[in-house]
Length: 331
Image 1 (cartoon, rainbow, N blue to C red):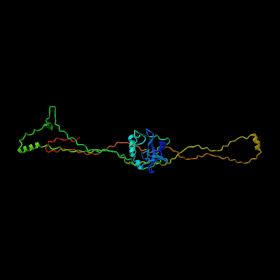
Image 2 (image 1 turned 90 degrees about the horizontal axis):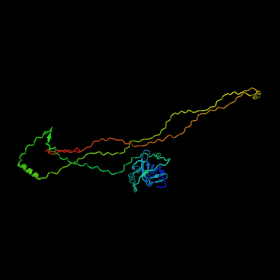
Image 3 (image 1 turned 90 degrees about the vertical axis):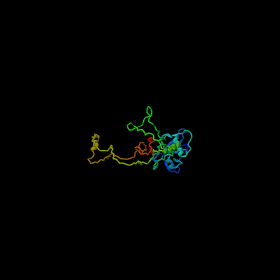
Image 4 (image 1 turned 135 degrees about the vertical axis):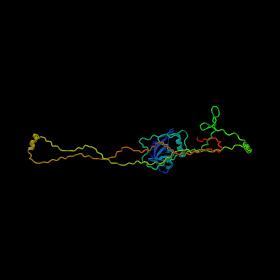
């Protein structure tokens, strides 16, 4: 880009892509805080669109328009950081990566340049409708990991102050004592001897899983808003003052010198005319600008309640001998 161009002169000019198609109007110019050189330009992509950031280091300002060497579709899908505030180093790095540019070294941040006096911010004459919503940048997202199996609860014996407590059932009813030992048969003795020499079976385990909610937000088209100008006619009434002429008869006595001159004349008829005039209102209409009306898109945040049902796996023990310890999986 030319260095002899005041970056504030770019504001309000048209921006085109590398094919010459109009992108929008330059809304703001961002300068490097360290060098003061123009780094980025925010281009308004439509009356109801958003500001897309384009790099100025690879663009060219000629013929009263800013030529950007990228496609219009790529520019409209650039990251949206809003306008009117500093670009953080992370945001600027994201823009460099999006356009495939080498990021400069050092701590550099870009700030918006002040608009030129008497220069509009490039809203009018930009009728490029049909702007698509910006796509979110591809970022790495960790995969969900399977929940680990809960540790089997350790069997505990009831212990009081003086030692183990005798187990009870019901309303503190003592447990019936077990019957006395029975003399095993020879076959049972041989089976018990072989069992004492074998190892216990390896523990079996199950992995319990559960469903969890992962909530993200997506942009959807809610509708369109239009601003239409129409003409209404209303009656008006004004009071104005007009002047007109009228005649009034005045009688003036004749002097003695005039009497001698007029006495010699004969009596005759005479007619004298006086032209009377009047003022009449002349109505002329003219156009006078009253105000500018803008349609501004703003974002409001509200809270919504998401309700759903989640499934969870649990385990229960079916032991025919009745000697297994109880298992509690309600964690």
